[in-house]
Image (cartoon, rainbow over all chains, first blue to last red; front, side, top):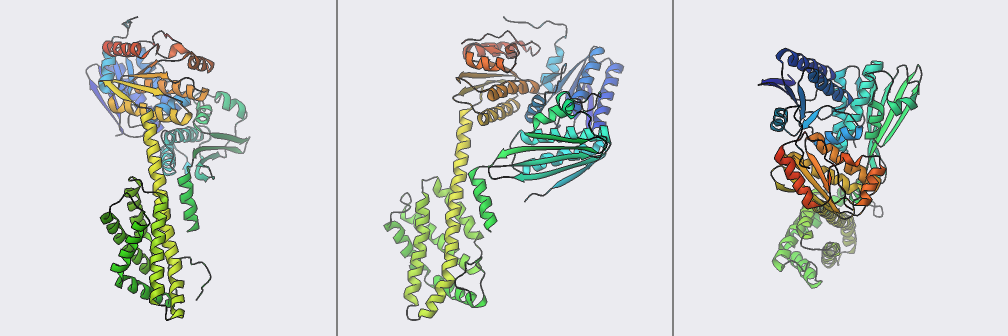
Length: 124
Length: 148
Length: 298
């Protein structure tokens, strides 16, 4: 199994264990979208720290997870993008919107705890 | 001396092999971070073009050495229908949805040199290179080795 | 027997092999005396002056034995490994290239003269012994000299790397907060290193906010400005927000010329303000906040 998906309260956490083929990426996307619909989850966390490469295909799949989840009122956070992968995404000019990113699982869950409709406090 | 690596591309599982081989070769050739990742990403992108648009093809990776710099040469070729308007493909990505998309312009930005030779009905060859500088010590070592 | 051609390796004909064998026996028998002569001439020539007499004698012994072994086996590998290891030790103490070449040539002189004295009554044998000895000795001298130079270049490169790292420090101010003060000229190579160090530090320290203080950077070219913007973006993808402080009006203009919206970068006038902004971002745990208004001080 290349992806471990576990449920934690109102959230699904998908932990990618190794590089994925396109077929596996699409299976993960469909699986997550289906689960969000079925369990009315509020959020999805996808841990991509095991991915050495995020190209346009993987980026598009991650975005479609986020877009589909958003339609069902859930938010998606990507955690663990490796430094070199982050540089590659930027140079490639891949668009990850509306994906949120966080450093690790704790950060991602904290981010999801913030209500989406809450206007961010601005000190200025 | 590092040899040539050829990866036949037919299924999406071959993409996984191609990018792992590309990354490993870049590391063996002394590329520093983040370059092995950039090279692997460009290879992945072009390998997918093969799978999606042509069905099969081949990727050839080869070390290139000059006096002041060295690098890796990646050739991605197929015998597919060819790209009608290479200029447009490079500027915008391909017209077809979900296809080349961002692929070509993005991969091009990750590499130092990028050329497409496409002949309608005959196939397409993408040639890309990435370079790194060689310092004096490295050049000295190599000259000694050549002398034996 | 070919006397005039360069010798491709220490491997020789049977006749030469027996000569080399005789030579090796001779050098082993006279080890104590030759070794002392060599050490004395090194001290007289004031080579290796940073080392004590005992240290010199112990290195001399090791090199001498390796030298004779290399003559015997025809393989310089062990000697080469020892020469590298020795070089690494003495380079850090300030031993110079001319000293190392000097001592190797002195050994050649000491041994050559000793052979001359020993075989002077049989000139033909002497000539053949020297024919066998000289190319081997030259090759050994070159091996030791080149090992030293290569080792020296490696040490220098390491030091350059260390200096470059020091020139782009990434410091942890408190939990989850990094600051990187950048001072001086930033070229593409340094910018690349900065990116690598900063992103690596974000991962290692689980940093949520990084303050990039570029007060000490007067201007950058477009490539470096682009690199800076890309680094901020890459940090964001990793889950960390960047605050840029001390942006000069000149660099701000370069960034604008690239077509980058300065509003995308979280810029604060000075380092103090940047740290306050960073604390605020950490305190509110509001990674949701859109980039705040930029305020640029020139």
